[in-house]
Length: 303
Image 1: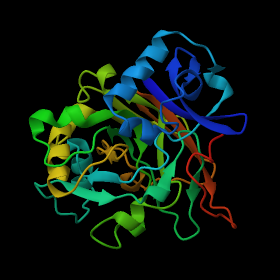
Image 2: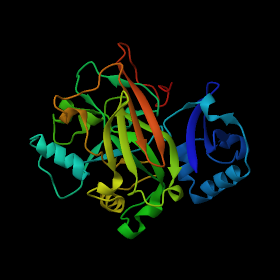
Image 3: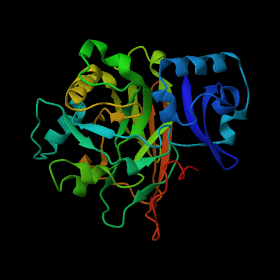
Image 4: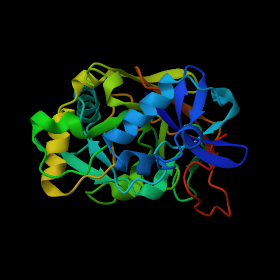
């Protein structure tokens, strides 16, 4: 199933996609939670109910008539793993970047106020021009869990999304954690929907592509992950509880703008498109950070 959070006629709702139509869940299954995180927290029974609604073939609104929002607009955690593909590590090494690679997983926080919709504007911040893209596969956790063995890791996944781990490179290098450079508002576009786990038999066999203004910049595959998804979930859940709606960005292939010669940072007017095989695509325009910008709940930046 493809689950969406969307805005239509000034109202935000969640639904399930049926071809090019959206079925509104609150209309046909009013007992279900009316937020995506609430739906995931309700567990497998709730998702089975969504499946029944989908099978009934209702037709509520066309996909092209709505504004798609971030599927999970309010995750409790948004984490990214650094240096997790062979090709990206190779380009870092060839560029002479003095970053020591660890054999262990290297995670950073993206503060949840960075969450943006699949077609929302990305802000070029007033404080830096070193704006970069990283198209990635994102995991969405579906069950509250701790100490998950690798053999059971996939059972706690709700599904997958496309993600752009937007980065401000000079702020990323200000401290070893990378958090500051990964957490600017609007710098976490996700979507265009949440594709449930059952639709992706092997998440390590997906193409990952990113374009800037129509130019293909990243062309990789998820089979080049250094740390696979079951290892990620086992590692993180050893340390803390994972909760429904938590987002894990799994790492990008080679092709970041910062390591091109010369560097090609994003500028106002650029359009970044990220596509993950089987999950759809997100596309975000870069604009100058508005002078009077005030944070609003994610998704309100959608076209």
